[in-house]
Image 1 (cartoon, one colour):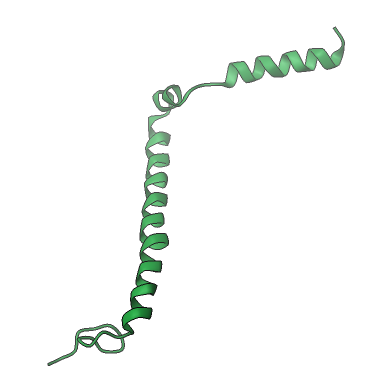
Image 2: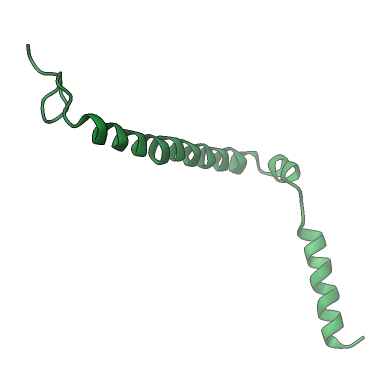
Length: 80
């Protein structure tokens, strides 16, 4: 076996030793899994809060104008 084939064999063995599925990872490091889940939840929240809400808000303002009749220029309710 030449050195290149040996290197490929060692690399394949290393990959096999390091591979784990998501459940093994979660079982071995639950604290890290918790923080990764928080990051994922925050990313999902950002997608819904900004990528969906902002275009809908923009469309509404373009259609009806700003400010609404019951608000002043800052968006606060007018004193009546």
